[in-house]
Length: 121
Image 1 (cartoon, rainbow, N blue to C red):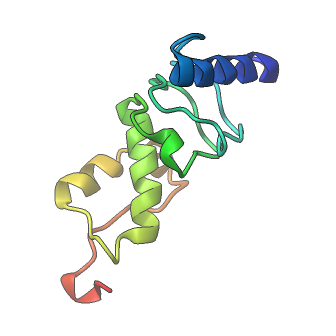
Image 2: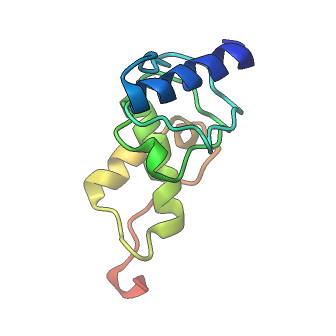
């Protein structure tokens, strides 16, 4: 998908969100690696199977209700817990799920171990 095609999909998605015209974004399977999506309103978009490695994810309400697959969910959770685990320690089930993040399996991202209760801030 070219940059122009992606911009068109995102513009049509915004029209769909605000007027029910346009088209809901279907970015399933798209290669969005290294794409800056930080200002995109992806609410309700389908990103199942999309490659978002090194992409900028919207950290505002524009990422609410996005459809993702387990691969992307692991990636997002691993990054979130890596910076916030001292405030909200993940459960053993969450750690097990996140440690199957493809970059952890390749040794490119640190494994997430559950922190001790005493380390909570």
